[in-house]
Length: 222
Image (cartoon, rainbow, N blue to C red; front, side):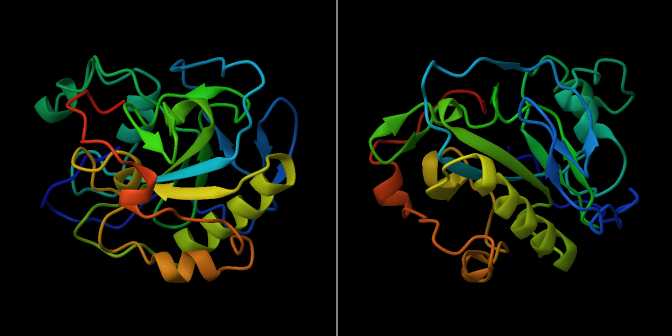
């Protein structure tokens, strides 16, 4: 999801969980992270291989890296927020499997076995509707700030654990699969560093022209 603009930048306040060991529990849920259930999901198509990872960024309110607004967005609890910018998002039904906050705290909103609503109109190589076969990871951030060391460490560790359960082959940014419509994870995401990490090595990132060979859609963000 792309939700950012220049605004007051504040340090993240959630308690970090980057030292916790990640391990699979059941039905696509991970232990070692904070679980927060989103109602915005449904079943994946029968027999689909979950073989792709999509990386996003998000900040709510735009440019602010603190508070619980992201969680409330994914849980459909923004309707009573006094901030007009957030109230305008109250009817949006979106989610992601994971959120990694600035200090490395990992939250899970949807079982990886289920289809989270994170990619919207999208195409990866020859396949459309990337929600069907991908896992979505939101990084708390925007297009104006570098991502943090704890976020890169946590993302690498998460990918390594995901590969224990799912046959991941591809990784893409939201901008790769929805060019012209999305810009995340933006210019400050260090792709070479991420792709060289031990838990990530071997995954393929198709370039935007390769990943999505059709014109950008005017559809809503999910």
